[in-house]
Image: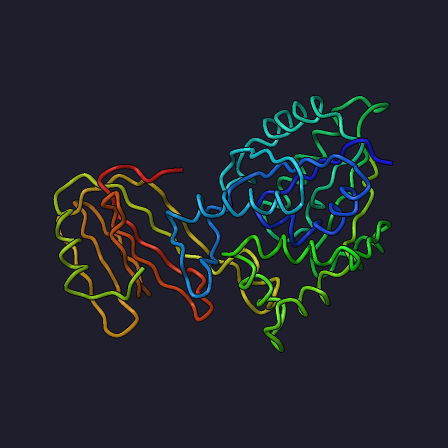
Length: 218
Length: 117
């Protein structure tokens, strides 16, 4: 059994779409989970539909959504304080050291993050790379395992099949509730995944019913 | 935000003439544009808290697509595709354009105090 799982993604809602089934599985086993959320998604385009947020109110609204989502998942939350869309321009070294200091404090047995260069959004790629860098700087004997999540269209051709496959349908209710806690984002993000239906739950079940990860080889 | 009424927005734009103001200007089609459509391009530009003074400002357009131009001492700022506006509780003038799904495509915002974050 894992001792403590740390999930590191840049945006409020990445945890919901990406790993909330896996997180629920760990929580039901009694494993502590901490979410390190890189930004507040300040630059998000989804303002709710119909729109109820604007560029200036979005950060506070998404912060509340993030806190609500973490309550649904029953996980600890730490906000890292970076700004949406700027993570790739930050010093990789500084971000890695920042992450390393938190990981040394929490001492997780497993870290979940995005697979660098295979995660589409520049923030995903940059934070994933900083996580890999941070963990590679830790003591080989005690450092955590890393599960990296790829979401690009070509990742399977380029990387082969992911070795970790989580069927999260038993935890799907929790996953859907976590996604819906992100009120400004749920409809826009799920809607963009399907042109044929607007049944959000059906889209989520089809597109997000399995969560895949690659165990990182250092 | 509300639908732009040209007279009301023009009044607000004029309010900032010859004052030192902070401008937020962005346009984006999102980080996932070419992920969902391989024929699309990811394009965006963003500047926040640019300090400028404009000598003249005008909003032009009809229906649901307006353009706003700010004339500076040695340059210009403009945004196209604006359809909604709001004067928030801090007195900041927010203008934006959204697509059919309510996603932001363009924003131009003007404030006498720096924007937060």
